[in-house]
Image 1 (spheres, rainbow, N blue to C red):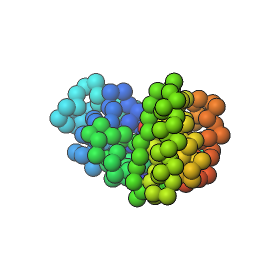
Image 2 (tube, one colour):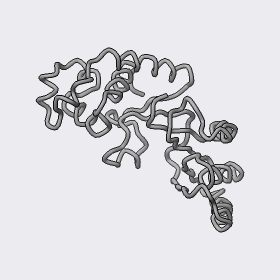
Image 3 (cartoon, rainbow, N blue to C red):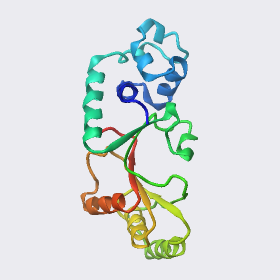
Image 4 (cartoon, one colour):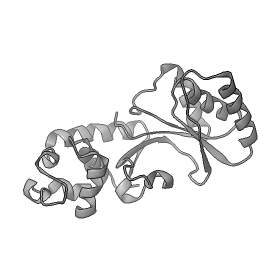
Length: 206
């Protein structure tokens, strides 16, 4: 885990307009940390290749630091871990993506040494898709794998539920922050995931 101060400045830096995940990594690769990036003057920031006036504009603004303070407090109150890409804290396969999240929020714990099986699909699941997921989970129940999906309606939710039914740990990757569960009908499922060796992940703040 990164220290809370570096997490704070990482959340603030990532929240700045136009910084994004790629520019975040470009900045910290030069400065060494989000905290050091935050302290630099605009003129010094703009000397970094690819970082111009618009990208550097919000860096150092107290508005984003105050936002980060509230976000960090929310995470601490809700047992949410904050994982930082520049400190090599992301899951291995995710870290290999060139635009992987600079900041990743995680609720719950899961075994990252398990092999991953990702199942995603349409909200309007066909009978064939339903049968396929059921049969796949039956085969995988004793194979020491982790099923990853998106907690959405249809295929995603069914994949999580079948994983739970077959005692397979599962991770939900959310398209929103961890302050909510959408759709609401998956609220219980999300709790079951956390109670059975799984986790919820999001690149979005609350």
